[in-house]
Length: 144
Image (cartoon, rainbow, N blue to C red; front, side, top):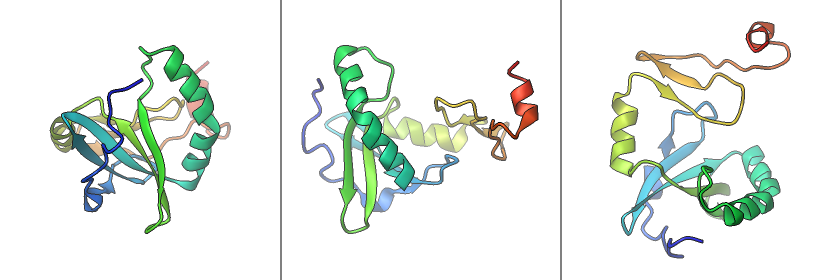
C-alpha cells in the first residue's frame, strides 16, 4: 500500500511537539524520514476512541481507493512514558514549507469534515470558536 518503512518514526524529536494552533488544542510536530514528510499528532481520548472505531472502514476504503483524498495514516500508537495516544499521518506539505506557511499566512483554516467554522486566523486576527450546533440558530439559518 505504501513505500513508508516500518522505522519511519526513528529519530522523531518528541521535544518538537507543540500546540498546532487547531481548535482542539492537541500537540503536533512535523517529521521527515527518507525524503517524506509526516505529521505526528497527539490524540484526545475521544479522537483516539473515534479512530479505533473508524480504522477498519478507513483501511477498507484506503486499500480499495488508492487515489483517495483522505490523509494517509501510517501509525496509531500509545506512548507508555506519557500515557498519550498519537497518530502519524502523511503531510501534504513538506515540514519546512508547512512551518513557514503557518508562521506567515494571513489566514489559516483547520480543515475538517464538519459544519463548524474552522477559521483559526483571518487577516492576521485570531478568530473565536464558532460551532454550528442546534442551539446556535444564527449559524444554522445560513445553511437553509
